[in-house]
Length: 116
Image (tube, rainbow, N blue to C red; front, side, top):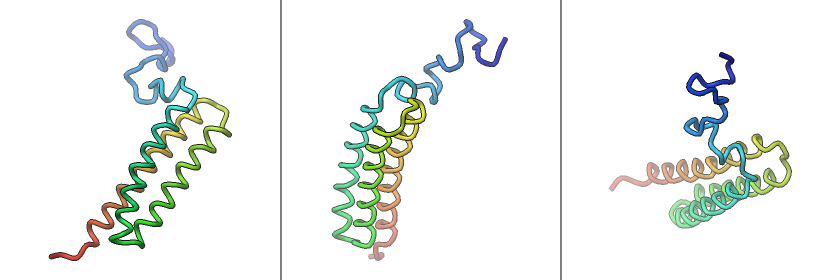
C-alpha cells in the first residue's frame, strides 16, 4: 500500500482529521479565523502587558510592542502569502508567538519580583 494511503479504508493520510497537521484550520480555511483569534489573543495579552508595564516597564512595554508586531505580521501574512497551507501554518505559528511572548513576559516579571 502506498505511503499516501491509510491502511484502514484506503483514505489518504491528509484526510485523517485526528492528525494535528491535518486539521481543517490548517488545510482548508482562508485565514480569517486565525486573524480573529489572533486579535483576541493579542488583545488579552496586550491588556496584561499594559498592567505589567506599571510594575516593570522594561518588560511590559517591549513585550507589548512585540505582541503588536506579531499581530501586524499576521495581517500581512494573511494578505500577502498565497499558498493556503503555508499561510495557515504561518498564521498559527504567529498566534502561538503572541501567547509565548505573553507567557515569557509574565514569568520574567514573576521571577524578578523581590522576595517578601
